[in-house]
Amino acid sequence: MAATPPAPSFSPPSNKFLKPNSSHSLFLPKPVKPKNRYCFNLNCEVKSFNNHNIRTFTIEHISNMNKDNSTHNNNTSSSLVSVSAATSASQFHTKNAKKVVLFYCTETKSLAEKIAAETDAIELRTISWGKFPDGFPNIFIPNAQGIRGQHVAFLASFSSPAVIFEQIPVIYALPKLFVASFSLVLPFFPTGTSERMEDEGDVATAFTLARLLSNIPISRGGPTSLVIFDIHALQISIAFPDDGAWKRFHMQLQHFPTIVCAKVREGDQRIVRIKEGEPKGRHVVIVDDLVQSGGTLIECQKVLASHGAAKISAYVTHGIFPNKSWTRFGHDNGGHPETAFTYFWITDSCPLTVKEVMNKPPFEVLSLASSISTSLQI
Image 1 (cartoon, rainbow, N blue to C red):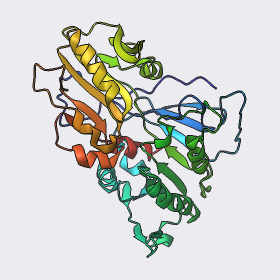
Image 2: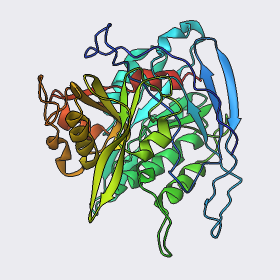
Image 3: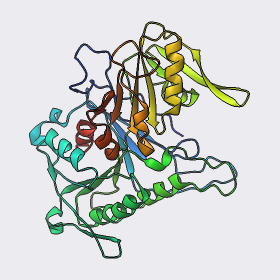
Image 4: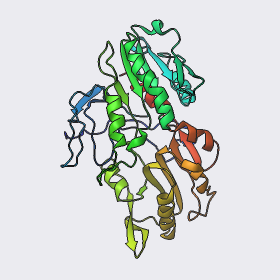
């Protein structure tokens, strides 16, 4: 695998919850790849919007990294784009801005409206998402001939297998409507969260979804641009909840004070302990790519508090929270870091979660709208 170039520079995103003098400058995005076993066969461009330089790199092929079960796909048609989160599309001169028609699914309507509000260069278009009497999708793209020759994007949400099935036909149809180019914006790639092929019979769902996206039809402008978001950079003292989080992100955060937690086995129990770093007297932010039940974050919180952390907050890019597990996270108004969080930042990559936690402390939602708007100008 070719070496990844240095991450592009950026300014922190504006957010009404973050004060100008706050050290909690949060961050986005980075291309995601399914963990451990797979990489995408995608040519990528990374643009630094501070100096308008382009760095290009290639990840060789979709492959099973297991030596005994290798699969190659050298005909991948999608390309990943990584852009700095905080750079608004307004930085592009309006007269040079690429006009983009943005479609969206039902779940991403709110985020799509925020994206369109970032720049006059993005026009929202709707899709009719109906159902036949038997429950199967009945989908219609109004005025389809009106997007011929235009740059088109689709803002997707793969929150469940059912909505994936609804959206894949649209994703395959749009590039074939004689559009100038097609971009798929998928803030969260769901099946890559815990993909393993360790035993005979394990099914690689992440690989299957990657192949579906790799075979999106080519538009008049060429291969589809696939934009997926993950954690990118952070300017705050942070804690990694386990070795996995440290391995994924420590190179991007090596210039900042860090605390590394690790799970150790004592008898039949796995206990979280501090492996390195000093939390005493500090406001510590636990950083990870996603949260589901939240058990690891809570165990990490307890050990940080027991070692003297003054405040504890958390940031995850993707707040999945199945079965309303977000209710486990209480709000600390001060003085109780062992039982509650001062802040819990998530992005709006999972729209169903956003609806549940909006305006419920300690949760604060950082929108991907500016970053997505910028990515559509590439």
